[in-house]
Amino acid sequence: MKKIHFLTFTLLLIGGLNWLLLALFKWDIGMLFGGQGAMISKIVYVLVGLSAVYEAATHMGRCKGCKMGKDSAPVQQ
Image (cartoon, rainbow, N blue to C red; front, side, top):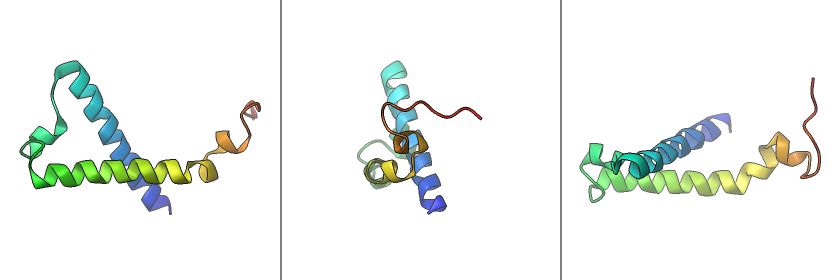
């Protein structure tokens, strides 16, 4: 499970950086792979999207902050 979480986190990081680069510099990471029309770019985009769905579906079960409840403050150690 840790490997899947690490992979999905990495893909989400790549997706987030892609949006940042697109907004600031109008440059898309997909350009490294031949543009948005290239099959490898489409595969990367699909994997990033599936990672977001997976993380959204499994987040509540793993997140310590969410398990404590909305009104609870984190416990200081």
